[in-house]
Image 1: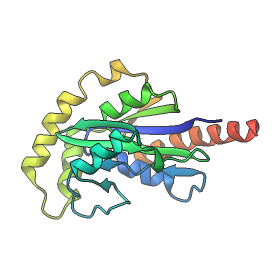
Image 2: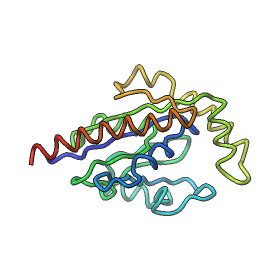
Image 3: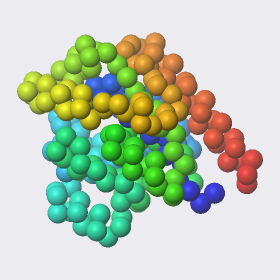
Length: 195
């Protein structure tokens, strides 16, 4: 198969996308975690090449102009994107995307897309965002909350998601990881059958 297989997690800030991602990629040698590029500043605890590749706007633009990006979008006044060199054709790719990224991926003929919509209650999302950093910027969290309401409005009607993952507690988190792992095992078994 000559296409990239991508499992895409999308959800509002604090919905638990990264926690699901870490649970799925733990001890899974045939899964490749996608590390995206962004022009935003690193948050407390984020590491270059682990959470994101942090680029300045000029570096990001150069990658886009050279055709090195699978998708590139502007979200909450920052640029985000996935470069081709952060993907693997021999493994199942999984990553976190914003709504515009999902839209771009859905039109790309180089990939087979399995999108999941991750949802959590506003209360749980707010608690997670406040606990994410030692000294959280409350105004930035509120700005993201408001921006997400706009950016995610009608998303479930626009796209055909593989599933909606409700992610408010540990039990739901564990079920979500199992659910995605079942899909990955099915994809992997189909790939082995084609070889």
